[in-house]
Length: 369
Image (cartoon, helix red, strand yellow):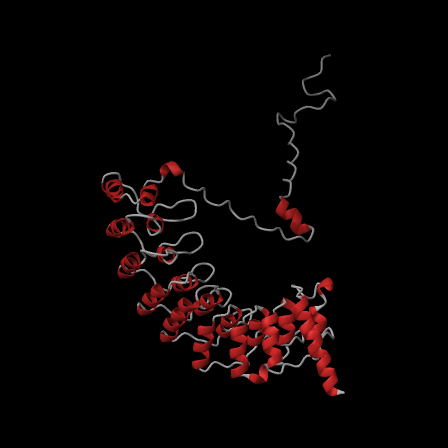
């Protein structure tokens, strides 16, 4: 007798229904979840930088570089070119126009007439006015155009530098004066705590030019005793670069001469270390009490002169009564420092200086005995 369907022992559907499927496996943990389970915090990945504009899509910037005012006008009016296009460094046409070698005033004027923003900044935070301050000539008309059209005179770059910082560092006294007359803040500091006066005096250049810049900044109420992050006040920088006229002007303004850097160096230390004999003599006459002052390494100005091999400064110090037997933190006198070239203590070996110091030390010993 035949069996009815479904009566055998083989597995099959029950009451016409399929057996349930097993549940799907759980999804694999993400890398972030694995890191968290193991006690690690995943570092977020920065999004990729925006793609730089293609050079073929830049219209106004190449024209600004050539000073082609007519081409710029045509591209804006008839070609729909944007005055805010940017190149790979974030520069707008106005950034490029202010540095153009020819026809720059007409080009800048054209862009401003078509509503170019004088306060657009590039990827280092610099506005067009900053780049005007890099010009050695023909800057006046461009600066006036930008300022009269609303340029922010105190705009600072990512490094904290304003247009006044740029002009002072670039040794442009007339531009410094113009910026100050337009209300530039002379006491803005960059990320190294340098004001415009620090950058002007730190630059090696013509002393008469630096004094003019200093005079303009002083007239604008620049702070003259504020140190930068290295502890250098304007006086220290003027001494280090041998700006005798600036040192005299700062002395006339009543600057404190005993103030030291964060390393304990006075202006006399810095003058002697850089071989500025005229500044050293002026300092000794004005503040003889610092003649043997020691810095953080125990070095006197005589040590500083010996370390750098500056014979003239050493002779000036000795003629004014500098002590020759003072020992620094390494228990070395100035003479011992001068002959230690082989131990990398003296950066410049000067046999004549070494002999002078040796004789001075011997004479000192004879007087004491």
